[in-house]
Image 1 (cartoon, one colour):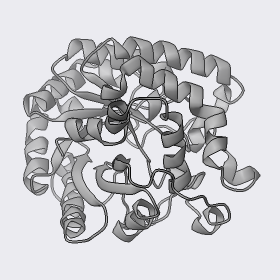
Image 2 (cartoon, one colour):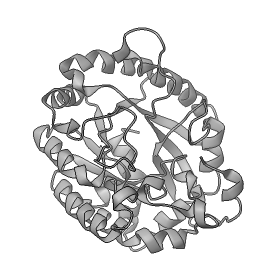
Image 3 (cartoon, helix red, strand yellow):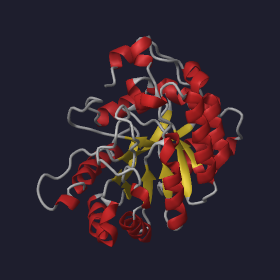
Length: 331
């Protein structure tokens, strides 16, 4: 759970506060979860803490589903809820929730079109795509996605049929898997080249369970997987997730919140490798809040991104912080 009292024990000022940011990945809950509640005021507390965050993208988190009606349509409840929060954000001076990504079961194949149409209708012009997590490895210590996917989900014929239906609607797909599964995303990108795929959280480098003491091997495998993915022009990458406990972050257990420099001690080389593999025009920094907020503060996280990208050109940095997200999510 994100502990704001703990985060407040070590704060830093936002650097380059004028740099425009589109945060392309955050969640929102109005009920208690393992990450606590995270509502519009919480989002504004973080996005307004010093960085120039002007727009955000909500990404599915399995909340506020409909409790009645056909099972396959129940995720539309999350879009209905978020459309209301987005409309409220547009009337405020805080960051605007400019786009919504929700969930649909793509293994429905072509029949998923009914669900997509319902999301589009509910979103008031803000609906951009679907996340259907495939995150699963053969290790009970590594959390499995709430949808309990088979380890080869993105290779299934029915799933790829659903992915084609998604592409035909002009909608994007958020891929969330772990680093040993990146070859599965490569297969999806090759099989459905018309689909815009956004790989979440740096490709998912696991840092718990049997991977906890194998960081060098994990990062080597991650680089191999990202290189293979980058060869497919329909794939973009979210550069973030570095505060996730399943990636091995333990700051909340061992001391004060990390500074931006401490974050970069662990992640700078990997972040730069990912950016260089895809190019800044296919990468976007993300907060993944409040999930990353379990171990790091919002200001420190974006300071780390600003520092790690300092040697890129102004145009490249504009892509990393806002341009890529605006293009991908049509903001």
